[in-house]
Amino acid sequence: MNQDLIKQLSSFNLLYVEDEDGIRNNIYEILKHMFKNLYLAKNAKDAFKIYQEKKPDLIITDIRMPKETGIDLIKRVRKTDSKVRVIITSAHTDLEYMLEATELHLVKYIIKPITEAKLTEALEAFIKSYATAPVYNLIPKWIYDESKSCVIGPDVEYILTKKENAFLKLLINKNRIITYQELETQIWDDTNIMTPNAMRLFIKNFRKKLPNGILKNIQGTGYRLVI
Image (tube, rainbow, N blue to C red; front, side):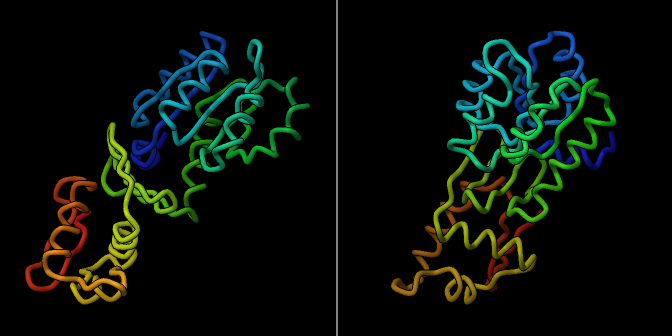
């Protein structure tokens, strides 16, 4: 698996669900160093509990499991979450599930046996699924999800205010210094005046939600990201 893909995956959390111990352990050995966090489950009940607690970015799940299938699991997830990416693994005999599974907005459907080549192709599809989505890598293990207005780092998740979200989006899209004037005219609420104290408080709170040192003040000019 190429290093560029591994670097990209390092910003994301994965939940892997497989009831067969041998397969689960083998795939774990391949994936364990690729993701920021890797959570394992051997049935749909445990998987859904982990999903609710950890909110992973990607779920890879087998179809045939005791009591509840992987399809049932993803249907439960999709009731409240349309954004989490899903890869389903199955045996050839599970192809009758294909039509039902396509309605769950999958990234990929892997036919067993799961090889590293098949896994690589699926994970590349996972990364490409963000190509048109507003999710950005800030630094390794830190991402900015514009659609959710949040910055996610190791063991932390910060919800951005409307101004903070707009400012971070502007900093990323322009990839240059954002002047004080631009901050006032494009980010600030027209009903409020951007006083020096208000701006300092805004920046102070904004920095707390970013990786250390990523927001640089250009004295007398404005701010830019150092990434």
